[in-house]
Image (tube, rainbow, N blue to C red; front, side, top):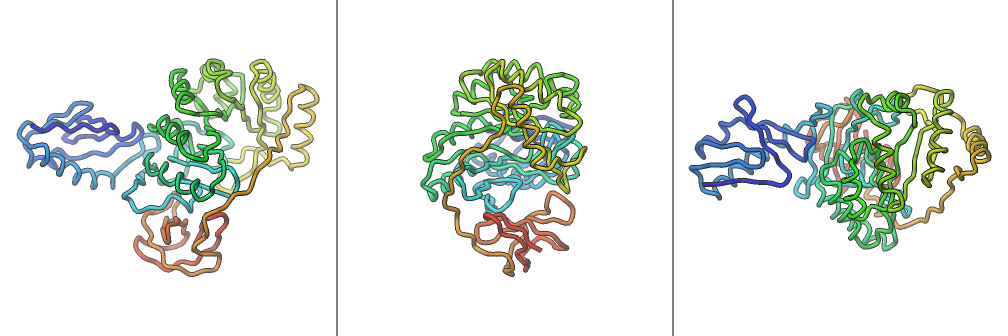
Length: 394
C-alpha cells in the first residue's frame, strides 16, 4: 500500500477527476485515469491512498502527474491561469514589478509572493481584484523567495527593511507566517512590514505573524463608517469592525500604521474620522494621495502635490497628529544590471504576461516584461527601460 501526503496539497474527488488544491488559493484537476496503472486510488482531504501500489511507484507517478498539473494551475479567486515559480523553475525573481523582489537601491526592498486581491478598491492603481482586466496570476515558492532575498541582502551587507507588498493582498498567501519567520531569521533584516487590508486576518493569525517576527502592520484603512468602507473597498463582505478589533487586539505589540487613500471630494470626512480613531488608539496615520494610473482605476482627478501637502498641514494643525512623513532613506548597493536601455539581447519567453500583448521573458538571471507580437521560446528583443533592475523590452 502507498499513501501520499503533502503539506501544500489537499485533495477532492470531482466528476471523475481528482482536484488538487494547492496553497489554499489554487487548484488543478487530474483525471483519475492518470493513476490507473497503480490500481484503485482512494481520495481523502489530506492523502491519496493506493492499496495495490508500492510507495516508490506511487511517488514516481505522482510527480509526473504533478508536472503536467501545474501547467493547468488556476487561481480560485480570479479564475486566471497561474504560474508557480519555484527553485527548479528556472525563472528569476528580479526584473519584474509584479512578483519576486524589487530593489531600488535603498535600505528598503519589496517582496512580492503572489498576485491577486480579495478587495476591488475603486482607486486601485495596479488593477487588482475581481474586476481586474489581468489574464494571468503568479505565485512564488516561499523557500525560493527567501533564498533569493538572502542572496540580495548578503550582497548589500546593510540593514534592510523588508516590505511584503505584492500586487494584491499578501494574507492570501498560504505560507505567509512561515515567510515572515524565515525573513526574521535572515541576516541584515532590520524590520518586516506587511502591506495589507487585514480583511481575512483573524486575531489568532495576527498573533502568529507577530510571534514569527512581523514588526509593522501597514493597513489599507479607508473609512471607519462600515458602509463607506465597503463602498471604497468595493467588497460587500468587508467588516471594518472586525479589522478594528484585530488591530486593537495586537496594539502595543507591533507598530500599526493606518494608510488611507485620499480621494478629493469623496472621503474628507472619512480621513478625519480615521485620524480621530488613530489618536484614540495610539496608531500612526500615513495618508496617501490618490495618483492616476493608466491601467488603474481613476474615480477622481489626481490632486497636485502642493495642494495635497496643504491639505495634510491643515489636518495636522486641526488634530495635532504628525501626517507629513519625510523619513530618511539610505542608499545601498544594487546588483549590477546585465543589460541597459537600447541593448538588443536574446531572451527566452516563458509565459504570456498579465495583459494581452505582453510576455514574460528571462535572460542573464533577470525577468523582462516584453510587449509585442511574440511567442514562447528564444527571441531577440530590445531593452526599452532598465531602471533599478526592472526591465521592459519590445
